[in-house]
Amino acid sequence: MAKVSFKEMKNGTKDDYFLLDKHEKKYAKGTADRILKFMSGLNETLEGYQVSRLEHSLQSATRAYKNSESEEMVVAALLHDIGDELAPMNHAEYAAAILKPYVSEKTHWIIEKHGEFQLYYYAHHFGRDRNLRDKYKNHKYYQACVDFCDKYDQSSFDPGYKSYSLDFFRPMVRKIFDREPYAEKKDQK
Image 1 (cartoon, rainbow, N blue to C red):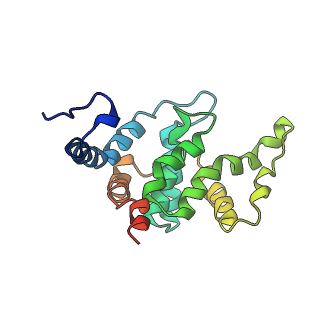
Image 2 (cartoon, rainbow, N blue to C red):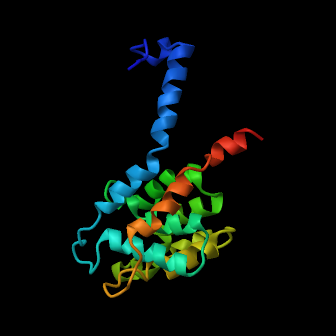
């Protein structure tokens, strides 16, 4: 297998970077499958909860799907808590970063902010401000994030709910992650 000639990036040649670009594009094409594999491993019940992270995610996505949301929003609902494992203190931003190249500004914002908006349901029990989300009250996606949290996130911890399987969502995840990244589209205009 061909490899670059450099040991420091500053010494790379055009051929080196074209070689890496080819490999990186191929690797990026496998993102959906890596995400699905990661999601399938989230099947342990969370300490204290009645459902696993995977089940919570499947319920969120199922609810979005049954509410006739776009495939983009269904996939976002499925992946909204993907950061819980590796970034528990900023899981929403982590999930939003994964989705950002492939989703609209609106969907990205909703996923990025959902953690703060979820505080509405429990922060007051800890003597904190449950209305922290109100700092975004005048933002164009404020109500969309309130709706996302109410319809798909806070309501998806039900062990009796019949959610669709991860395999059901697999084609949607692949379709979203096979998109041309939004950043590239904007750069071409």
